Image 1: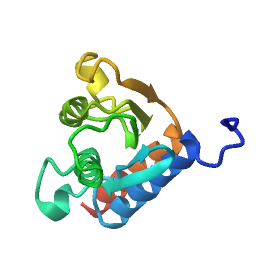
Image 2: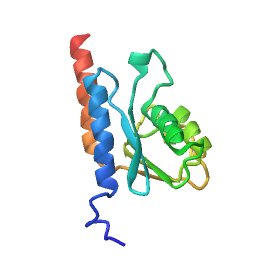
Image 3: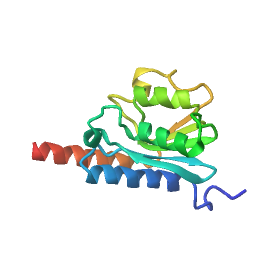
Image 4: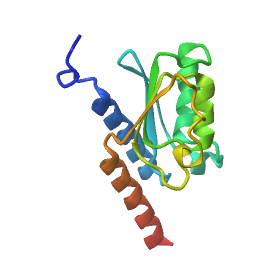
Length: 154
């Protein structure tokens, strides 16, 4: 087994891939949240927020990725998968992730207003491991830049 620091496909690598998705959202004038779902060090889904483009309040990055990963796997459960997401999931996404039985969730920035941890600690599946704070500064800066741009235009 490779040492985590020597393994190029580690948590930081996958969170950087999620940040790339968030940048795509930013470029599309969507709230810059991106994610990837990984199975055995392979990205099986990539997504970012599409709520504006699809005119759909449920089109969060996580929801898009869950659908894509389930399609890839040919089933609704995401066991043995890890979600890397640039912002702590909201309660809607947390509920969907709980139903998917995903093994692990790694998020970058904490969402102080709408993040699931501000609402409830018991939304996720009991076996899901939750880790936060990885590359939080980069994610937070992208979000701050997006909302600063919005304020200056509006």
